[in-house]
Length: 320
Image (cartoon, rainbow, N blue to C red; front, side, top):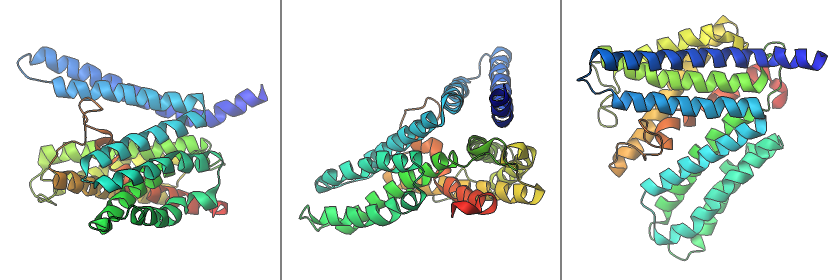
């Protein structure tokens, strides 16, 4: 009985967050259905696809958290694989580079295995040190030097962004429940992912409603100052309201909301710049209404590692 009570105490924040997300998705579904009835001539098919996709993504996400932390680790490992695959599909690579891509993909199970066994010292250097050194060496072994610098940069950046950075979300799961964070790592993962995704939605919504001044017109014409500031304000407010997940006091909640919003925006525009360079709007069609995996996790490539170190240094200093 004591174990059951203890489990419920630690799982309570996650269950509360699940209820909030369920309520938001239910409200959105009813709202879109009502709009379709009120304005039958208007096309809400794209919005309907987005919401259906959110139901599926949220369902898989929460199911993995409930089943076992290992299930969530596998979920993010698959996410890294799909994102890296989309990235390599978008960029132009030499024939010789294809021999090296195998090793880039092999870094995924290794990196997430390090998450599983909680080998922090190797987790933090495996990709930025060992893979960073190995990839150029393997490219040299192909015997083709023309364009090798570009290939090094492309492959290394892809592995860093979509494997190393994203894997920080999974490593959050290893952070134990403490008095400040009763939900432990699962609650922190929810806090990060929810705020990052809400920031994307808020920036889009505020930009559509009040956007006039474009911030980066050559990269993303839809990114406006109003959307950027509105997204930050919305994310900060929600960061304060969701303190039961993070364990932050008011000051740290404001700081974390600002950090997630700003870093998420940067991640978004960086990946947008890559897609614009490749001449595509979406990275793929994997997720109906959302595009590809890169379109869904672009913000997390920046917010995940920065938030992880923000939390670990403040609440878990023993990790370092």
